[in-house]
Image (cartoon, rainbow, N blue to C red; front, side, top):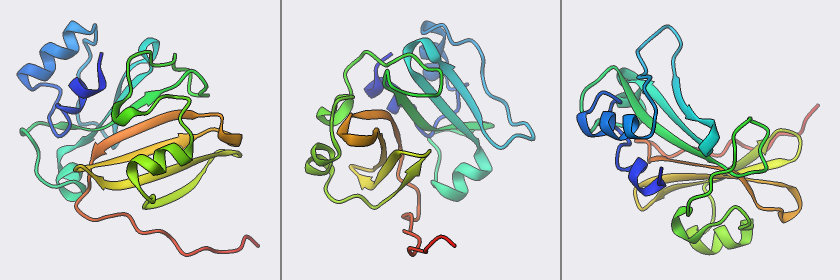
Length: 171
């Protein structure tokens, strides 16, 4: 299951003929439906892949137009490295943009430029987001002490860029 193939289906419902065929070929038989829960995930934990789906009304509100109408729209692809605490196996295929799971923040910054924003993920990891890189938003969760990437997320860029919250001292 290659990232460049999966990203072609961003903005499409899992019921899209080609996406449905792709998922079935990769032994994913479940298809997300619009339920009271606002998001749904299709996971291949054994491959390190998580596909996140939003209801079409939310997708149109945040991302804009869809590739095809449907209840739940594929919005975000998450790919996990071996060192994660989410129960996913490490993704073994090639990562996009010349990244590897051993890539450092400095290497990512050399590829993508200055990040749009960053925040803590858990007690030690830091997530950096690059908005609008070749039409996508790329988020990388870095392990502490330059020990590489825990996971990466790829989605089409939302209609409005994220805004960094002003720094506030904790009380």
